[in-house]
Length: 349
Image 1: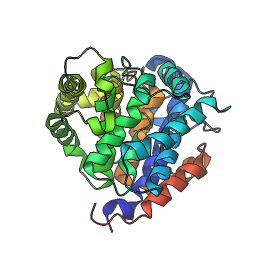
Image 2: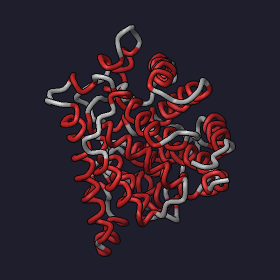
Image 3: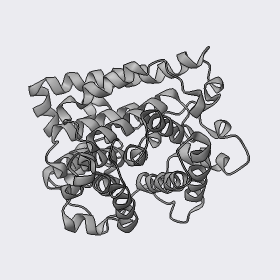
Image 4: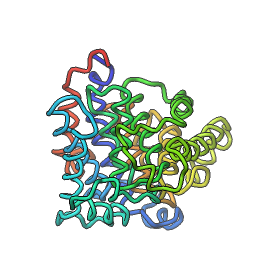
């Protein structure tokens, strides 16, 4: 039995991402002074009584449903994964509940996915929006995946809508962070592990999972294409690591706005880095991490959604107060996904 199994990491991450989403959804598009005027001191921010989530959680659940179908049919591979995840994304696109300020890239790509086109032609090759990695946590939580499968699945789910290499790399890193935290990685060493992972894969284009996606861009080779994405992620991780080393900067960021260091989170690499920063400022106090993420000038629901996934993967289901977890929208399905994966046989992973 693994540490992830004991602490119910999948349940903690699935509930946590939705709580972050619900806390940050009302503050999206506001700057910090406006959020403070509306919500009061950030350390005391409360979950809305009607804890509605955004498209971030909706698409996360769509990915989780698609993954569960794919995994029920045998070992995960690109062909086995693409069809059910694509169908779930298209169902989300047509859903009457798709009214939560969905991103333009996701909407355009999902409309094109609702056709006989190869998915590479639906993918928005120039978009590296955070819609690629805001939803990827299930890939880091799903049991039974090897390293190549997890990496390939993270990049493929991103590429169905966001084809930019930075969207692919940031999604891979986000899933990797969730996976490592669920299995007991120490937060203090997390950024270093992610940087090493990125350096190892800098010129590794996985054609099995991505096909000819690279050829839709202007890069001369697939290796040059994917390296662009890893380089942008490495750059933002280096900035994050420098900020965490500076004790005075950490103290200041805890009381101002993490976006000032790692970016506003509208693009994938910034969403990853800013969410990691919010989590790593308060790794053992998850509600403070969520509140800090929700009180930012940037894409606060996506930043807080990812922060909740990291905190929940690290601390497990017990991280979240019962009265918060009971109120969050889609609670039944979120817990169902988490309990199913927490209950799987994870021995040897």
